[in-house]
Image (tube, rainbow, N blue to C red; front, side, top):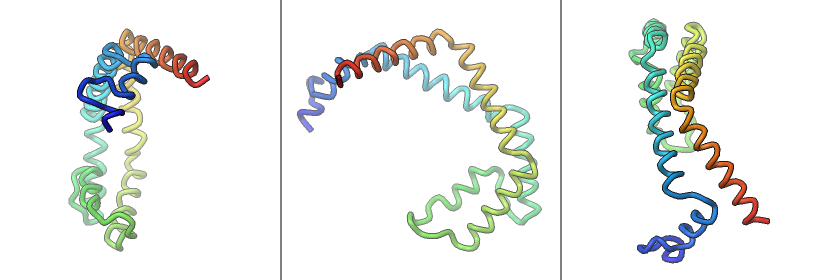
Amino acid sequence: MHALINEENTGCIDQADARLGYGDTWFSAMGAYEKIRDDADAKALAANKVRQVMQQWEACMSNRGYANRDPRELVGKYADRQAGTSPDTAEQKAAMADAACKVSTGFMQIIRESYTEAERQAVLDNQATMDQIKQLSETIYANAKRELA
């Protein structure tokens, strides 16, 4: 571990990062990208058409006997199931109801459209950051090819 990462930041992982071109500029750009992505996700989920389809999904599920407000809540109910075990009958029935309600409401199409719109706008609004990441990534890739040659 000391050879890989050490307190002086001179371990082999830091040396490899430096040789490939990762540095403050890269990490700053990626931090900006993460914020841009998080903001786009929040905008997509806040869109009126998403709120409407969530309400339609909730009503559909309610008609089938479930009291979940959105699919994430339903997933959360079963998320703690022990890994490697098969779903029980209740989980299978919930999954079938979820799938049927998503199909009948056009849920996935609305979600996909909303995310596509929000991401497209995020790229347009942040083109300089996207161009910077692309250029830095191309440099890192070229450096990696050179190092591995």
